[in-house]
Amino acid sequence: MHVVPLPRDLSPTGPGALRLGGSPRVAVPSDHLLGLGQVVAGLLEGTAQVGGAAELVLALDETASEGEEYTLVVTEAGATVSAGSAAGLFRGATTVAQLVTPERTVPCVRVSDGPALAWRGLSLDVARHFFPVEQVKRVVDLLALYKFNVLHLHLSDSQAWRLEIGAWPRLTGPERYTHDDYREIVAYAAERFVTVVPELDMPGHVLAAVRAYPELGGLDEPAHPLVPFLDPRAEVVWRFVADVLGEVAALTPGPYLHLGGDEAFGMPEELYTAFVSRALGLARATGKRVVGWQEVSRSGALTPADLVQCWVGDGDAFDAEAARKTAPPRYHPLIDLAARAFEQAPHDVPGAVAAGAAVLASPSRVLYLDRRYAEPSVLPEQNERRERVGFASYRPMTSRQYFAWQPGELVEIPRGARLAGVEAAVWCETVGSFDDLAFLLLPRLAGIAEKAWTERATTWEDYRERVAAHTSWWERLGWGGYYRSAELFPART
Image (cartoon, rainbow, N blue to C red):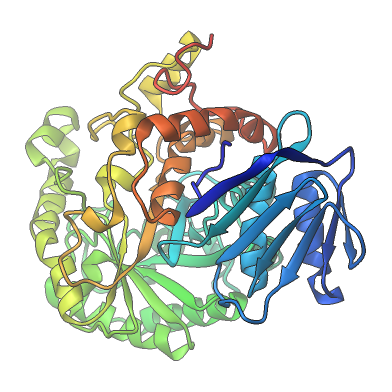
């Protein structure tokens, strides 16, 4: 049985199987869950109904936990998912969908399951490469299949600002999300129990915003023209920040706002502290919990309600000397600025823990998916893309190496930290198409799902056998550009 992530307990109950037929029925207990039934019916290529006889019954259990836990029982007569919440019913239904064989049968099993970690996410960089709404929905479909529950949208960066802001119309160009686009993404994700977390990165990574509104760049020339920052001494900056955070919070039903806060290269420490401290207050005033990259801990303004995202991976420290060897001389001052910023990184997460903030684990060495593959593809034509797609400064790793970690053993997370969960990230400097994105995400994202959901460690050999059977899902969901890793598909050509 090729289920990813592996359930907590999956036990065959006999040799028989449930036959689904051409259009299986999915029954929900009430009208208000009919939308859930329709989403599940889409996974099974069936129809949804309220009550009555059905191949799959979704049953709310008032005695069960209201989290994502569920039980599944499959007999020859039918399948029943029981859970204390709609989210649990949906997680169980994705297990049913993965159990369906090519012959349209589901083996007789009993499953008891639930997540190891509360936050299981993907950060998608839509600033450096724009993905239209329908492509973002495909990302959501993939996340839902693998029981992720967070889509973190990196909506702004030096290259572009992607979400329209009413009072600041020059921020966005033609490749943008209107308010209606954003609402559509959020609603589609919510139907699949994926929470959208919007990130508007500040005070660094704001070149696109400053080009649109030069007054945001503040009172002094930046240390390098490519790295302006939002200057907290300029009152126009605070009108901008308040407008952005207020508008995005109003558009976002989920409980989180991500402030960014990373890599404010060349920004004087006292100005960075002043900016982050005030911006945190404005974000909290919207009623949201605040998330920031690990550098925000340098402000000294974190509280136990905040989340800090750890991203600087052990062994991935910035190598200024290597960068100077490959970069044109005009970029060397920028490299020096980056090196100084990275010198402080080892103190960031311990500082956040000392402040009581929760930690979201995204260390680059195992959770950044813009790293190149070390193993070849079984398709020779993919090897050109392997040399092109992915961040060249990162050491390539094999798919097996990406699987060789456990959330509780990450060296980047100090002992005693409150671990909120894990989040993969894919940065899109080298992405030129949706197939490039598929190439970077798959098959590796499925392995991260297993680490985030499954409490016990699983072996590479067992995981490899299960995930290699998922290519039909990837094709069906529009992810045909996945990497044909020789580690996973050694016998295929």
